Length: 239
Image (cartoon, rainbow, N blue to C red):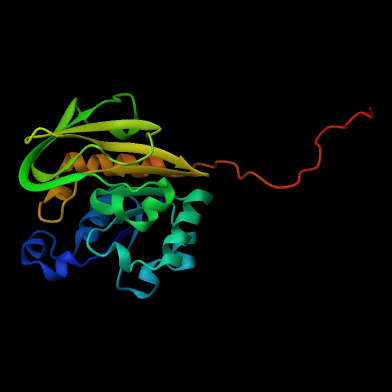
């Protein structure tokens, strides 16, 4: 599978706390465990030409992973539209943490994608609500993260086609932290954990979920439909 991991790659350059956790960037850590799983992985970042997402890169990407936070507005409109179009054509998309506010995700959802949040070292317990789903393979009844940023309901997204995880936070909130959608021929998985000041992407269960999500999101030959004026496939009898 050809995977592209996109990261705005700003916090790691500007915040020493984040630099210590992810010295080569969040994208490098995610690419690393996906490469260990046997995938062909490329990375792309905001400050590269075309944000690293040229027409050729997108055309050769089976699944795109997106992480963004502080620079959503700097993503060029035409690049966001190109990513959206590729999803409609069948490219899988895994949206991580604060990428809920990315241009790409909001375009595909058609809503504000807003939510409540708090940075207070909350413990997060993420409950599996669909144990038969392939994204939960290898995960028990729940996975627990010692410290994370809190996200709370209401999460302004369309009703998920599949709800995979619900998180409970130490401060009392809950959140739909794993949800899937289909748009056109493409499949989308939103997965909540991953605030930049915590080492969340080193967590083996979080890594397992991302690996499962990538595998689920890959297009496996969904037929391409033809739209517009259509000729009959049977003879139409004269009236």
